[in-house]
Image (tube, rainbow, N blue to C red):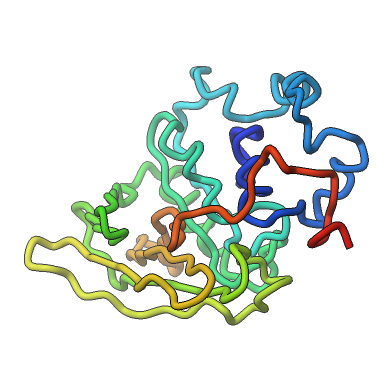
Length: 242
């Protein structure tokens, strides 16, 4: 789930939305969030935060991280606090227009292709990306040629909130990308006239099975600014506490 580094992602949640999603209501009622003293959450996170275990030898195993862009619990760009810290071989997939349940997506097919490659010790695409100063995602697809590369984007004109519960399940749309002369793919979006736009690049590769590999970059947001301050966080699960 997209909540590694619980302290940072909890702050990010409030600073993006100005309240906590109703999906986090039990944690709010228990007094765990917001915890401005840091004492309650520190005690919990020492045990519960998966990122605290990244130094263990087992964490070097291959990893396929799958998150829903429209998750009702977690903002889609939470990965910026943790993905780069995960050791060993790893791939990421952000599912567009998907709730936390991932129902109605091709997640099972995607996992099947990846697991098959691990079990049979077949090559998995080792792609990478960088972010330019203008926000453009420059994606190196690696040695294996992708069959499709898409730029996904979705806009909320009112808030930094990309949940399916807010925008519906068709808010994110895809545009095909073509390779540059050096073989990289560049995806970017304009700064929106209103609100916030989330975007990411998806790469599809042949896997050697009937299901393809599908991997993505992390999700990025324009403008990357926050409308709220953590110092003002209150135990509310609706705008203005309604």
